[in-house]
Length: 159
Image (cartoon, rainbow, N blue to C red):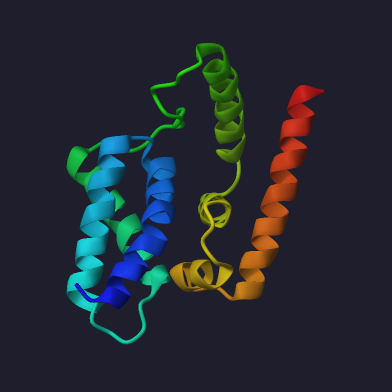
């Protein structure tokens, strides 16, 4: 593996894993799909002069859909927070908050959920735009509107 690809891997492995854990809700599945995605990306595109994170995320998303089809199991909206926590009380509060956010995000359109998840995970707007075939400006607007809508829906829940 070239040093360039190794740097690419180091930069995007956590971002890709975060995205996959959000989408699948399963730690082991996310690890497997992340590994498979980097392998496919490297085999087909790893030697190109320009490494595309957008392409990597597209490969991962497609691999996850393939996995669900093979399992005949599609994700349900459930908590994706870590199973093990040192402080149970803190973990419960975090879990309730995460459940609330996850449930509220479930009411956003799927494309907006995916875009917001990637943006919050630290993926650059340029890469998100490439992943979904949209303009950077469109991604910025969607992230802004999704965040505002999410805040408003959560505020309405409390009232």
